[in-house]
Image (cartoon, rainbow, N blue to C red; front, side, top):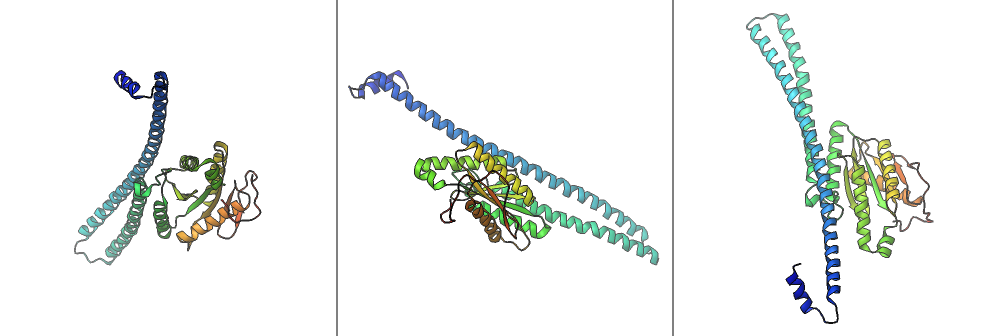
Length: 316
C-alpha cells in the first residue's frame, strides 16, 4: 500500500486506535491473503503436474499403439505384394499343383490379416480407454474438492474396463477406501478440517497409484481405485501400502476393501463385493484391509486394528 493510502487510512480510522496498530493489522491481513494465495497456487500446480504426467503416459501409449499398427500394416502390405507377383507369374497356366500352392499361400496371408484386424480393434479400444483418461481432466469428470476423478468418471472407467475384459479377456481390480470416524472429525474439528483430510487422502492415493490407474471419489468420504492389468494379490499389496501410508502421515486411519473383476461381473456386482470387503474391515475394527475373491472375504495381514466395535451399525 502506498504512503498516501496509509495516511488516508489513518485519517478515517477511529481516534482511539493508534496508527502503528493499523499497520500491524494491515500486515497481518497481507500475510493471511498471501498465505491463502500460495496454498491455492500450490494445489493448482500439483494438479497441473499430475495431469501433465498422466497426459505424457497416455501420449506414449498412443504412440506405441500407432507404431505397432504401422509395423503390422507394412508387413501385411509386403505379403500382399508377394502374393500378387505369384498370381501374375502364374498367368493362364492351369497346373493343379501351382494353384494348390497358391491357395496355401492365400491361407497363410489370411491368418495374419485376421490377426491384424484384431490388433486394429484392440488399438481402437486402447485409444478409447486412454481418451477416457484424458477426459477425466475436465471439470465434469473431476471432483472439485479433491481434484481426483468423480463418480461419473469412475462409472465410465468401469464400463470401459468391462468392455476390454469381454473382448480380450483382460482383468482388473478395484479397491474401496473409507476414512475411519470421519463424522467425528467433522463434528469435533469442523467441516473445513474434514475437507482438508479428504484432500490429503486423495493426494496420497493419487501419488501411490500408477498413472494408468484411476483414483476417484466414490462418494462422501469413500474413494475408489481401478487398477487395470493387476491381479488380486497385487491390488492387496497396494491397498495395504496405502493404509499404512495414511496411518503414518495423517492423524486418522482408513479401511479398505479389495476385489477382482470376474467372468459374468457387472459394475454393480464388482462394487458390491468391494463394499462387502470394506464393511468387513470396518466390522473388524477399522484401520485394516479385507479382500473378496468372489467366494470369501478375508483380512490382509497387517497391524492389529486400533478401534473395536460391538456391532456393524453406523460404521464410518
